[in-house]
Structures are given as C-alpha cells and as structure tokens.
Length: 199
Image (cartoon, rainbow, N blue to C red):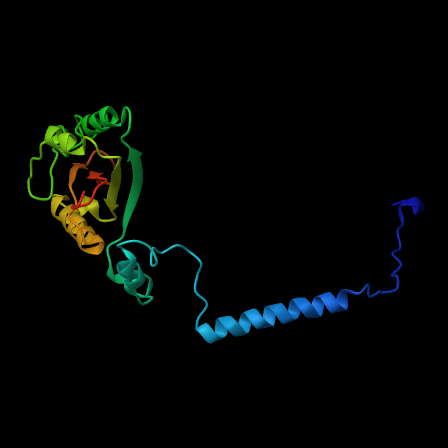
C-alpha cells in the first residue's frame, strides 16, 4: 500500500441538532401503544381470519381461538380457491371445466373421472349446469389432503368437508366434485354454485 492510500479518520464533535424533542415524542408514542396493547391482553396478529365478516363469523372466531396444539390434532389439507364469474361466456367455460375434470386418465385405473354430489355417487353434470344458469358466479376448489394417497376413496372425506362448510355457513350448498388420482398428491375438484339455499 502506498503512502497516498493511507487514510486516517478524524472524529468530529457529536452535535445534537434538536432531535431530543422528536426522540422523546416518538418514545412517548411507543410507550402509549405498548400500554394500550398490554391492557387488551396479548398482541394479536393482523392476519385475516374471517372472524368479523358474513355468515362464517362465529366459526372464524372459534378457529382463531383454538389452542396452539390444535394443528397437531387435525388433518392438514391444501385448498385452492377460485371465484369464477358466469356472465357472458361463463356458462360455456363452466361446461368446459366440467369436461376437463371428468377427462380420461384421472382415476387410479386410468379411467375418466366420475362426477358425484352430496347425495349421489354419480351426479348429472348437465343438470348441475342447468341449475347454474342465471347464477352470477361460481366457486371452484381443489382440495388435497396430506394423507390423500392412503384413502381408497376421497368421497367420504369431501362429503364431510362440504357438510361442515354448510354448517359453518348456515346454508345448503349445491356442488359436484371429481376425485383425481393422476398426480403424486390425490386431490378433488369441487364446483360450487354461488347462491345459497335462499337464492
């Protein structure tokens, strides 16, 4: 290293530029916020849990108040949700989606998927689409239980899930589903009408 590259820092005088008053004001704000949160109990997370909206409000509150070990006593599942508007070409898109989920090769035996509903093991897709005519939207779910490969049949699991959903929402639901075993994670496609039992 040459002498031209030597650098010796010199410390200057530490100055207070009036930050003291601002710092005290900020500290007072933090202390007041801490006291308020301590008065309310534990600090709650700000994530959405559905506990304050719509018909599922009571169930949302119940689920958010579960103990910390509840996750270890329940079956985990991945649920993908999609809201589809049926205006315009929506019904033809719903018809195409129904064909897609019933396509060849989705069962363990490589056969076409079989549509089922809450009451029937063989549901009528055409009748379901006729009931959907005039609906503004439709919900589509893909449900994959973590131990889905251990089930010989996913129908009872999905029916229990949809029955619980009806109880949580306080309404009857009109839905059809198809189980798929063509991937490493067996899953179920569910099509749900976007209207409740009162229309």
